[in-house]
Length: 342
Image (cartoon, rainbow, N blue to C red):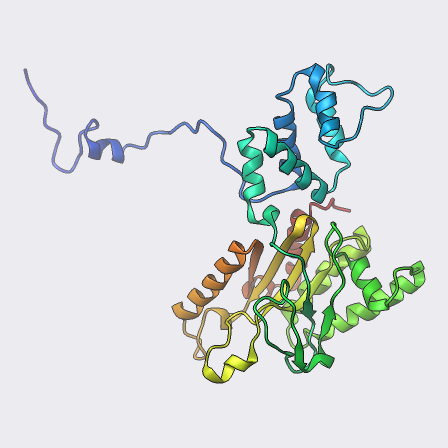
């Protein structure tokens, strides 16, 4: 028998080295799980789980779970189980869909649905929002707190320069209409008064970002959605104080994250943080890259994500083109909120 020894440096195709060096397509038996929750993939996972029922059981099961009952002249599940379930989820907002998904996973073995509920954005932040301190247009407020969104706090100085929203949130989060009514001090506003108060609030919030053109551009671009999609769009809240303890500052132990650039409070207790990263986030004062600063930022991001927040960062270079930046932002906001293009 003759053995052929491959030349040195050319691994035999059946050796470990040869197998690792060979580019072979590997079949992916299962699709990759989603990394974020959208209304569309949550509705699809709900439908997949419920369609395990037989046609003759599905109508009663949907009713048991609190979904809409069959109406007269509507096709029954025998025509299409998926269409029957889809018609019921179409009218649900995200908060209602989350509640339904939790009921389903309590009774069904539905790994894709359980995965979606396990994502931070749907899990939400534990506890009710008790304090929302934001939009300081003067000296920083002096606060002693652990988490200003979940704990009772007291502002000891400079309260006159910041806004404090202390109203309970509804299941749909905090919309621009909600924030405008709070600003106006009234739950009943006619269309003209609502618009006037909304413009006042817009100007007040913009003033908290004076000197930061990138933040003002993001805020202005987002606020255009109130005109195109109505005041029930979630409010974009600027300069939100999360961790701030000035009494530790003298000891050199100030908590790293004193405020968030922007916060969205969405249905299902979702809290979305938007951050604009200038050079100070990753470089020292001499404009040299600082691994330490970058690491500190990542540590704080991980803490927020573990607490249930979603964090999205934007680089300062994305805002240098003033013509392209608004379109980039609008595309992101529409995808994030699943808004149609008008």
